[in-house]
Length: 132
Image 1 (cartoon, rainbow, N blue to C red):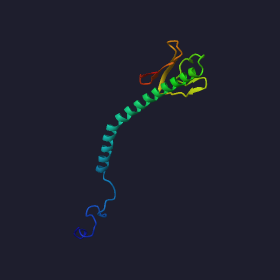
Image 2 (tube, rainbow, N blue to C red):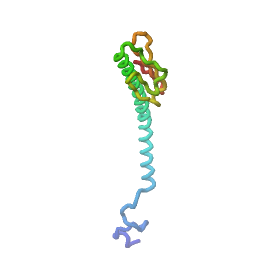
Image 3 (tube, rainbow, N blue to C red):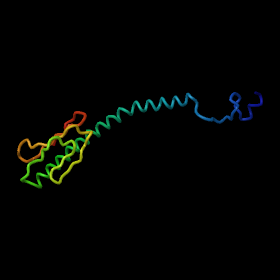
Image 4 (cartoon, rainbow, N blue to C red):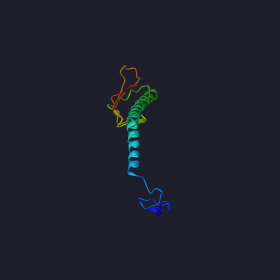
């Protein structure tokens, strides 16, 4: 292959000196780097999702509390609306809170003291309890 040295042709491949694509080793290195990044990032992303769902359940509890309190404040003679489980949504008079499934497992509105002030307890799917 004496004549191939100055011609810009690779002596073994018979092609141009420029690369046509990636080698298998380069692709495996890139895949290994992506795998390491996924291993490092996935637990953080899962924790962030759990935290977001817990905060959504807390926000739902707060909204149910505000709706029930607004109903009692607008209608002082009326009792707190405590119609069973409110995880599928809550309605008291003209105040409505849409459902929060699947983040919320159970929701309960009570007037435990009998003083007309609502108490809300929401349990999220991770076992957290949000009370107002």
